[in-house]
Image 1 (cartoon, rainbow, N blue to C red):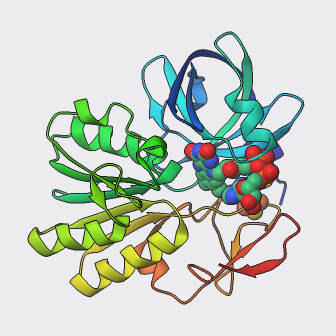
Image 2 (image 1 turned 30 degrees about the vertical axis):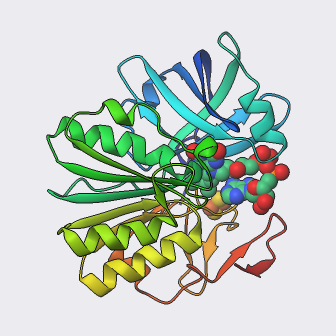
Length: 273
Ligand SMILES: Cc1cc2nc3c(=O)[nH]c(=O)nc-3n(C[C@H](O)[C@H](O)[C@H](O)COP(=O)(O)OP(=O)(O)OC[C@H]3O[C@@H](n4cnc5c(N)ncnc54)[C@H](O)[C@@H]3O)c2cc1C
Ligand code: FES
């Protein structure tokens, strides 16, 4: 069989940054001219973003409009620092979109985002709003200074709840604690979530206890972003987060795997969370 590497890997498209929004202390959103490859991008999918002279890293799509798309960058290391330092007029390389996406098959969803995990959910929430779905959203962070609220307070038909670990804004506690309280008082037919894996594990447990379906987006170290290198594998299933995910459904995550237990570092070493 002949493998067409262009189709498999994708060529980076150079995109000009047109807008830069500072979201909080450590996070910026970069809007760039949307390349044709992103016309059919769906919420939950990600891009491999080439930061000139530094590295190529996975970034969720946090917005996709007619002319522009956006990524939201939280500074954690060298590549994210360099990316977040770019300004309108600078250029990035974009491959993708890659991976699975959230299914919008819901009429009463609960959307839960922790930290920069809110990024792909913002795209999702706008899509749900455009379909007239009444959505409840929890945005959670350690403190009010690290919340990622975007334009969510202005989205019509949205119930927006905030949770902070230190109680500096909204509910004082963890995202899954607030989610548990909301699930006890109302009925949801789908839980969507993205954020730190311990938060996802707690939400999955809550959803399973209440018989609610769920879709969860996972993060792993990614090198190729398209199923070649194996750095994002979930053992023992062999599922690749870049290709079979990052969005996984309840039926897939119910199988025993590294989810919530193990991850791999940049050398491929398997480590416990
Ligand atoms: C599908 C997917 C979507 C993502 N979406 C976003 C997003 O929308 N916004 C955002 O800010 N970040 C996102 N990330 C995480 C982002 O890719 C990493 O933070 C980034 O690659 C770190 O690069 P660095 O050089 O700045 O830091 P490094 O110096 O390489 O690492 C700093 C820390 O981040 C961890 N890390 C490094 N690379 C990754 C990685 N690929 N995945 C998870 N953890 C990593 C390291 O273990 C280390 O603890 C996403 C990751 C994945 C897999
Ligand atoms: S990042 Fe290479 S296989 Fe997933």
